[in-house]
Image 1 (cartoon, rainbow, N blue to C red):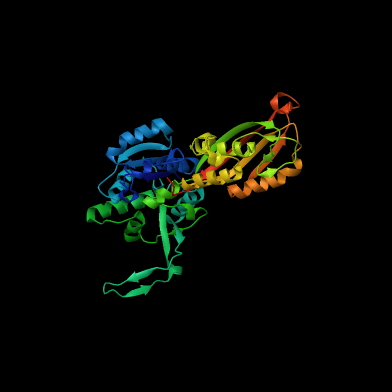
Image 2: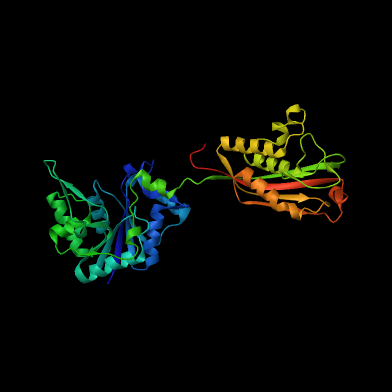
Length: 387
């Protein structure tokens, strides 16, 4: 038995808050309309489709086909009418001779499953109609004209969706009678009820996901506002000097020399601060803590790190993770790394901190024990709601 589809995409979708027909809205680079057509084509259950569009959307559809590829299932594109009933009728009239059953579907339901399409068509072949539905899960109140409120038994209620499938000759005749009598309806099942009777409701796997995209909130839910992510990298090096303490990641490491600098010369923290500031686009440590300022003479770099973390927080940034590498021939640092990591984790307010040490096999200034360098990389995140 020949089965076709009428895909209705002629609405304006004013409740969507979009500046265009909502079926041209893109979800991960593919439009709502293309996703809907893809679903019917992939199902293999229909021989062709008539697409109903507003005449003003023809150029948008042509551009969509150029951009996303034309769906081979679409055999006819017809103009919509003044009402949904008129639009569906135009689609039905565009179908070829010999069609046995037709699935009428709103393009604004792009997540329709094969099981849903199949269930409606099977019912239409066997019983004349097959309309997909889901149980009503909300409590429904009915308000009488006099304002009295009554509660309906939701076990007897169903939320009706599309596709709505019918024997072609029956639904076409129902539409023609409705046009003659001036009867307007919100879906085709109402016409079948009125003129044919015996409407069959069906359900199938995936019906709960077969949502209709209608309101602004529906489209906002499809484009979640993800946190902004930035990566930063930092590098620093200090000369080893007599008479200085060796401070790394806030830990005093016993050694015969320490790092020379205006502050405590904690080279690892300096690299980390530069990574954080760079990721946030806030310059570098020389800009914030110039070595010409006596306020920073001998200061703990961990205090400076607290200040940098505060600067980022003021802009809405937080640290996701950080990785610090210390390059030193001597001393051996393995025994001190757990405390280093703990210090940095506390300052950054995240456990995703790694500290490691390596040598250069006696190459370069680190290998010759003239100095120590450090490299750091970090990932920072700006949460939703921050600009």
